[in-house]
Length: 114
Length: 108
Image (cartoon, rainbow over all chains, first blue to last red; front, top):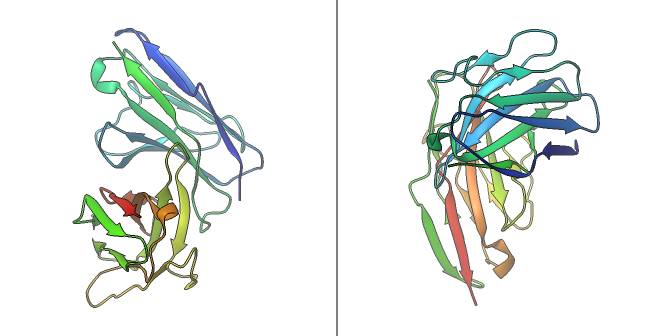
């Protein structure tokens, strides 16, 4: 299994600002994903982070709000832009070493927007 | 579009009693089903994958394509099984869709 770390683990931010969350994996992986878990809700896929190209966003999520980078096979970032209180959630990075492998999850970043 | 339904938000059982968590799905293709578990203050982790057909921590789950179900079962619950359980479906494009989750509390 892959070992995944996320930074920061939590943050409290003011509305209108942006936060960049980092996801680091201890080995090269094929697939990287970003999820959101709103308070009391299940996990919702935001986008698939593609290495060397633009991320693939799910319905309801746009690049201007959630820009994603993936410069290599072990690292990705998710930015939450122009934040509002509705963006208060846990943001999770997940990876699959190979396309058909199990997805492993990072510890999450707990974001609170005031 | 795929959908995963976990009808029970909360489930409380006594230690030693059987526990069953329900999961139903809808998907037009050939699904791959998973159970993930999140213990208190820990990250989400894989519990079972239907293609593995194995028992983990005493839990089993069988994919029933006729009933489109993937229920999770354990014959004798333990206090350490108290956690949040998520059923998930992976579609042909390798994306996971999660159910709403079931919080299990095992009482002594």
